[in-house]
Image (cartoon, rainbow, N blue to C red; front, side, top):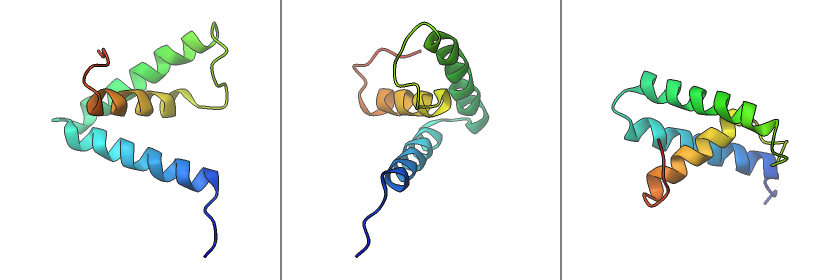
Length: 77
């Protein structure tokens, strides 16, 4: 059985997290705009931080927002 590359695994995980966000949202457009706004804000914050420059702001926003769904103790928007 061939091993999956790290990229394929990460890509699948991102798709599952994005799907969970969309399912939990009452409005698909609104959640898309929220992800975009958070990514935009993170992009400007990343100039000051040296955190993982390889991860794109949109992907980071999806990870953060999906974590907020599964872990309600994380403070969100």
